Image 1 (cartoon, rainbow, N blue to C red):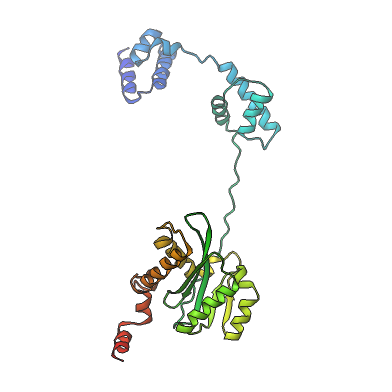
Image 2 (cartoon, helix red, strand yellow; image 1 turned 120 degrees about the horizontal axis):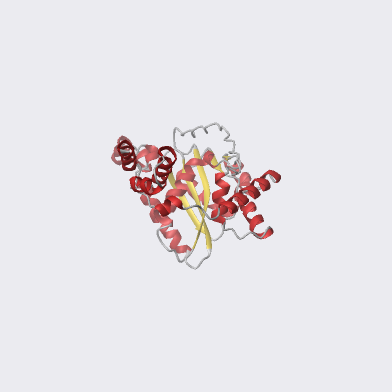
Amino acid sequence: MFILNLGLDNQVGNGGRKAHRREMAEKAVARHKVSIARACRVSGVSETCYRYGPMLKAENEETADLLVGLTDARKTCGFDLCFLHLRNVKGHPWNHKRVYRIYCALKLNLRIKPRKRLRRDKPGALAVPEAPNITWSMDFMAERLGDGRAFRLLNVLDDFNREGLGIEVDFSLPAERVIRSLDRIIEWRGKPGTIRVDIGPEYISGKLPIWAEKQGITIKHIQPGQPPQNAYIKRYNRTVRHDWLDQYIIETIEEAQDFATQWLGTYNNDRPNMGIGGITPAQKLFPKGAQSDKMAA
């Protein structure tokens, strides 16, 4: 018996869980024919715990049989439907925790078929123009005033140096307004070779293509559902929203336009752009050497 006690003591020290100690006591009684009282003392478990038996064992078996039969008959029946069937149709009073515990123990969980992951080709990087006015990008944004009225912004960007060429703000920006804004930019900037746009109604109306044809400008539409094809202006829109549009409660259209104009000057001249090497759009447009030559002239 000394050897028995030593072995049990070591196991108790390593074990510690009540269920494990009870199991050791049961093994001691069955294998070594010791009394229940002595096995409980050595294992560190009370006789009440040793003699305890689950009262709901019969009901658990009934629940398990019902669940197996139900899932065999209805292959697509998950736990929620099984529980509702047992509770509301069959009238059993069992709570969902108990039914779910048995359901999981029987491994009746429905196998969720994983979604097939399609291998998509990585979109190619947008080409960077070699000079200004080769490619511009245009896009719209939407926001609301402090009183809840919606307004829109038209952003125009030169892809060469990521320079913001203009931000037009108003409640409505139809094709005529877009053309007027582009004409004002062209007066001081010059004509672009191409303007990249999405398929918004202002862009696909007949007025913009007619105007572009007269100006000798190509309108390039991105493919539906492919915003990465217009990534430069999309990233610019995010900066517009993060830097000032989400920072203030704007009360009037005039206030929004003032914010846009002030921010545009800061963005082009004082804000480094990581997309062009950490310099400002103005520095990309006029490098240091060119700036010195311009000042000397």
